Image (cartoon, rainbow, N blue to C red; front, top):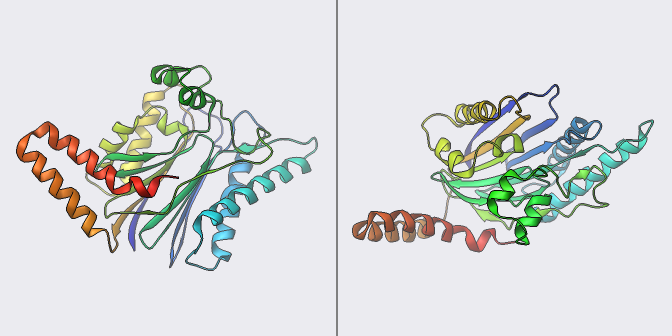
Length: 291
C-alpha cells in the first residue's frame, strides 16, 4: 500500500490551540488520530493529547495488521475516555477536560473509522464526498428528528453544542459511531478535520479544492488557510489530517462496471452523465460503509 499524507494546523483567532492530531505509521498501515479539546472545559488540550498518546501506544503495542479493527478502535476510545476522566479527577480542584475524537485505521488498502463528537471524517473520490460522519451534536439530533431544517441546522445558535465526547462529563461512557471495513480505490482521499474547517467550508468546496493539482500537503494547507480567512475574525483552531491512496490491489471489476455506466450515460445526455457518475461512485461504497 502506497499513500500520501497531508496535514495542517492553524491557530485561528484563538489564544490557545486545543487541537491535536497525528498519523502513526508502521510497515502494516497507518492509524490517523484527531481530537479537538473542548474550549469550554479546563485543559481540553490535555484531553486531546491523551487521545493521541493512547492511540499511538495501543497501535504500536498491538499485533499488526489489526485483525479485528472495529473492537480495536473502540478499545482505544474507551481507554482514552477513562484516562481523561482519571486525569481530571487527580487535579485540585477536580476538572472535567474533554475532547472530540476521530480515528481511522488504513491497512492493505482497506479503511475503518470511528468518531465521537463533531470532529468529522470524510471519504472523497474524484472530489465527490462519498461519506461524511454524522455529528454527535444537539443540532444534528434535532435535524435527524425533523425538528429543524438544514438551513436552521447551519445557523442554529447551539450549533457547537455536542452530545458526546471523551471525558468532559457529558456522558458516563461514550458510544462511538463506527464504519464497516471499506475497500478504498486509488486516488480516494480520507480526511479528518475539526469544526474549524468544516464550519466555513462545505463538502462541495472541500471536494473542489482536493481536485486541484499539487501535493496533498499543499492542498490541505491551502484549504485550512481558506477556512481561516472565511471565518475571520471568529476563526476557531483548524486541524486537518488527510490520506490519499496511491496504490493498492483489487476493486478493478467494480470500477470497470461504474465506468461503463458513466460512458453510456455520457453518450445520451451530459446531465445524466454527471448524475450517473455520482450514483456509480456511491454504489461502489454503499454496502461497505453501512454501519
